[in-house]
Length: 253
Image (cartoon, rainbow, N blue to C red; front, side, top):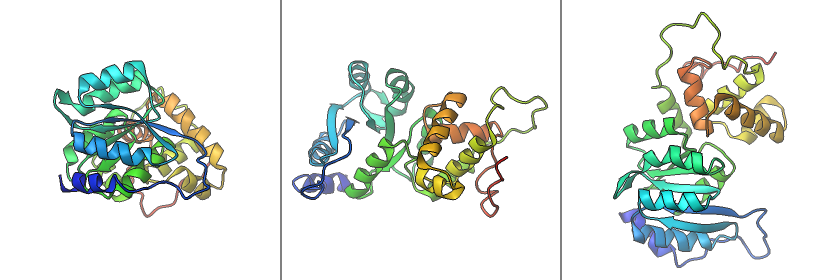
């Protein structure tokens, strides 16, 4: 709760862009958390950012469902522990109601069981309750671009625990139509690289990377980059990142 109090004290300060700066776009946000102190503080702080707009605040699973049924936002910041249920149970519903909404889970990085569950649901990343407010703001901006939001070391640790197929399939799976470039980008995503880093690594444009990622999500029928990487590892489409950390990316055919 100490960090929540820190955020509340900061809510009276300005965190906006410098004078004269105009945001390229406005990111709409829905907050789902039952701690009023936290949501009041976050709302005040986020609203002071010229590129943020808090569209709604929900304090329960039921309230969040009602909210997403009548409106969608660019980013949904979701607490796991809600008074009427598990916040992660909302993720599939939000993905169905608002397929273009990016979901950030507000949790503790030490709760590995919750992190592993969230990894499978289609969230875009995690925001630790123990981290400074500036990191929360940065995380929301990254999430609004579809990026994976979590420390690379944590990502590699979670992905390394995903079970691989015990037997190599003798018949190519239905999703074997992924191109070599798409597999290459999946590999980059599993290493925690951002779109810009992938573009630099593969010497292609940022727009090309984003197009490949959009195609990947559609082909794999998943809602986020995290879910795509998790699915790819379970299906044996790519190698676990720990095992190939010292090797170079495979060449593109």
